[in-house]
Length: 495
Image 1 (cartoon, rainbow, N blue to C red):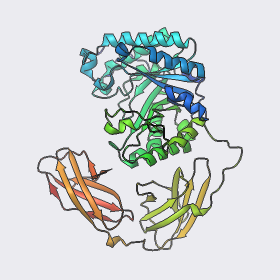
Image 2 (cartoon, rainbow, N blue to C red):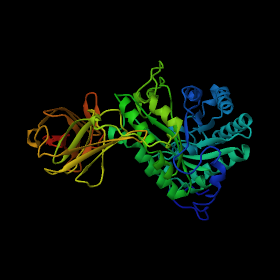
Image 3 (spheres, rainbow, N blue to C red):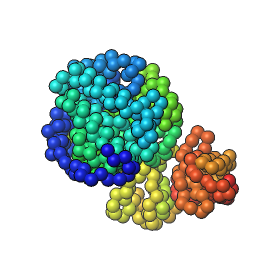
Image 4 (cartoon, rainbow, N blue to C red):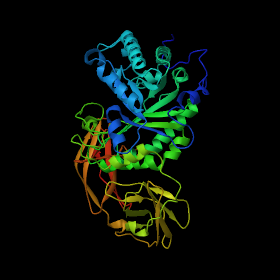
C-alpha cells in the first residue's frame, strides 16, 4: 500500500468503473428518474412519522466503537423494527469519529486502532445480515472522514475499498455509500466509490457556526455538490445526513430550508440525489460537538414533543411529490405587504410561507430574493426610476402569487440618511466582534483586515462576530449595510 500523502497510485481502477451496476443495486428503494424518491429520518422516529401520514423509506442508525461497552441489542432492535415496517436501514459506520487523522488511523489513538476498526466492521456486517437476511440495507462508510489530512491520504482510499468489499462479502444485500463530508477533498477516493453503490455527502448548518444566508442556501449547495460528485465518479448521491439546528432563533431558518428541499425536489433528482435522510425528528440533550449548544436542536420537535415550525415541512417532504393532476392554484397579490426599496434595493413581506420569492425589472430575468432575519425577502438589484418592478412568490405545492409596482426614485428612507455606530468592539488574533446601533434596520455587518476583502459576520445575541485571522498590529474596519442598501463604515481598530 502506497503511504504517500496526496499521490496517485498506478494501475487504479477508472473512476467510472461499475457505473452501470448502480441501477441494479439501488432501484429497489430509489428510482432514478425525476425527483429523488427516498426520504428518511432517524430509525426510532420512522414509525411515528408513518403514523403522522408520512412515508419514510429510509431510517438512520449509528454504529461505532461504543458498541464494545453498550452492546449490539439497540442496533439490532432498530434493524428489526425497520425491517418489519418496510423501512430500509441506513447504517452510519462511524468508528474513527472526530479523532480521525492520518496518524490516528496509521498508528492508533485514544484506544482506536485499525485492527479493531476491521473487527467491529465485520461484526456489524454479520449482525446486520443475520437480522435483515436478503432485505437490503445501506452502510455509510465513515461519515465525514475527509478531514484532518485524510482528504489528501491515498492510503485511506484503499482502506475504504477493502471495507466496502468485506461488508459486501459478509452481507450480499448490503449497499455501500462513501461517507464524504460536504467540504470537498474527494478526488483521490475513486477506488472506494468504485467498490460502493453510491457516493454520499452530508450537510449540517447551525447558528453557532454559520450565517442564515449560508443555511438558507442548503438546497443549492446540495445540488452543486451532487453534480460535482456525479461528474467525478459517475454515480448517484445519497444525502445521508441533513441537519439544520433551530438553536439561536433559527426555527424559521430550519423551516425554510426544508421548504426549499420540497420546492426543488426535481432539481435535486436531476443532479443525481436519490435520497435524503434528516438527522432527528426529536431534539436531544447533546450539547457537545462541533456545533456546540446547537447540537441539541436538530429535531423538528422539541424534547417535550412540541412541534417546531419545520415539522409540517418534514412531513410534507416525507410524503413525496405532490399530485400534478390539477394545476396549482394562484394566490391573490394581497399576500405581499411592505413593498419598499430604492434604485438599488427591493424588499417585501410575503404571507403564507412561500418557498421562494423573486423579482424582475422591466420584464428582465427573474432574480431570487433571499429571506432575511428581520422577516422580509429582499435583494440588491438595479431598479431605475420609472421601472416596472414585479414580484413573484412560489409555494411548496407549486402555486404562485404575483404583484407589480411602478418604481420611484427613493425608498422609505434616503440613502444619505443611514448612519451607524459601532460599540463593544473586540479585535483579537482569531476573533472580531461589534455591536451596531443604526438609524435603519441592518441587513448585514462585515469586517475587513488591512483593507482586504469584506467578510460577512454572523448575527449573535450579543452583536455581530466571526472567527477571522488578525495578525499582530493589523487594522480592522467594520461596515454595516441597511435594508435599503445604504452603508456605514467604522473607523479602523488596531489589534
